[in-house]
Figure 1 (cartoon, rainbow, N blue to C red):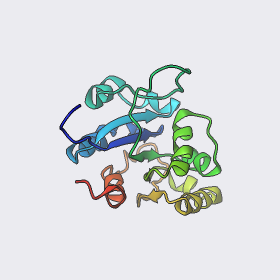
Figure 2: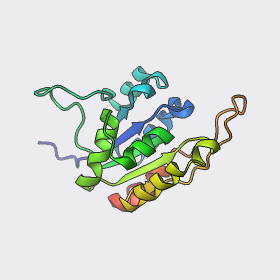
Figure 3: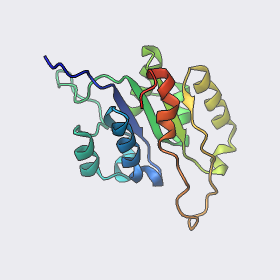
Length: 181
């Protein structure tokens, strides 16, 4: 048994958005704030991230699919969850209780398990105008999900990557997990 205190474990749920390749910024910031980190990616997000770099940085395999009965759990239980970037699709499915991917299954169960969860939306202004999105944010807030302040961006292919404050997830979660920093 180790005398070293156990670090809290953060699940970073990554969705398929152009900025997902920068998830290492959140991983590094979390590790600097004394978190251990594991990544759960939606199946589509796998095409946006450098799997080898993320697994090397965290020391854990990226989870994207359910494990078979009897297989060992590749990640410790989560003390908190950060969904970044949180896409239009994931936000709406999560709020509706749809659990058709491992990432959504974990998010839907987090509510019932009382795991503090923060989401950093990343979507364009046209998607954000849809009434389902506003309703989904309202439902997630009612469920206790901490929603980041990121503003939707214009859907222009040449506009470059929008600024995204990865560390806001940690700021939102700090009061929920004893103010880690």
